[in-house]
Length: 499
Image (cartoon, rainbow, N blue to C red; front, side, top):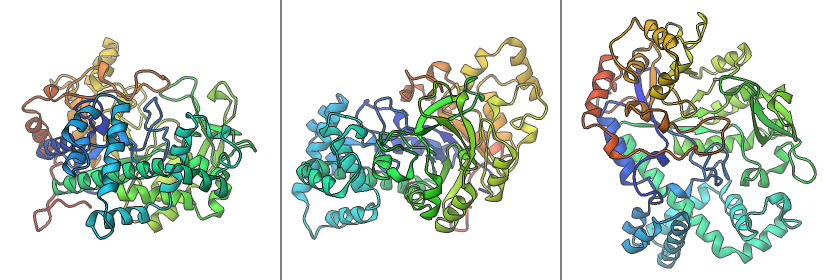
């Protein structure tokens, strides 16, 4: 990412609209138009997969599938797979949306003809996703049929993902499987159209690859040997991090650890499939918790605190080499926050991966703080904050008066108020890429943060409304982007360059 550019961080679930209408249609295109008019060139978001009831996008049911909650119901009406009355009814609740999707599935298969363009597109989708789709729809259908019982307690054969038992149960549940395949096809089509629209407006899509996966997921169930599990399928060791910026006791995530030795012996096929899915969805992909590719914090299953863990080396260099050879066109970014040693940074620099610079972390009083503006590197990405931080206004309002004064002194006491002062400093950074959370552009306080690490309630729910968007916001952002030399660089034909 050699050109200076700017972007915005906003998960699609935070777009306006009725809660269960989906957001991959008109609301997303309107947002793309707004940020394109503002001179921004990147839309960054969180993982897009189906979530558990806590809605956390970093603890997914599948690392490949799309979240059906994001599906735009109005698009289904345009395809004549739902009536407008059915669309309206489907916006009432999660259950109503699922019923609407099932109605659309029935109409889709009822209209599907072997020679139609839609049939050809559906067949191509099944072929391109064969490496994950059937595992996912079977896992979801079996799990629903068994009242969401954890897969470790499923009947013998099903719990070990044995072909004979799974084939027999899949035959019994074929209608449910077809409906689940349809939902993924619809997500695929809507996302493809949205990405095409974004590219037409000069916007790159910046996605996220969670490094770990949830035990209760299609990925673990279908690939049990690739995880550190006991004979009953329970984790032997689990994931987390030691004490860091976010938690003085560390974080006990609880995901099963990988069987890295087997992954390496199999040529990292499982990981390469994950990057294949990323390359189909994104232009840029952030590797979440990148430091876990160099060494991971291994915690015994049953531990009560992340403090009980230890560092264990991981084969990240070999993995990244395989990814670079297989998907050279996918721009990768390393999430290098938290406790990052020189070995992690050496691995990142070896593969020339941009790292993350968070301005909210810059003011601890230490002169060697890597987030201080004069220490920024051109190849990295600067943020005011991320989805795991308070909004910039909320963060600043919680500082004591002395630290607030120090923040302003660091930038020679500019006259701008927060959060635009820090936005301006991010844009002025020598880092080639600057990303600002949408809450900061809107000037919102801490009531509007997306996530508070280490807590379980109230996260991942935030949505903005269009009446929060000032009429002049595009012009204001555009002026700042222009003043800091971050407007799009155009090629000979007038199209933005993405180098």
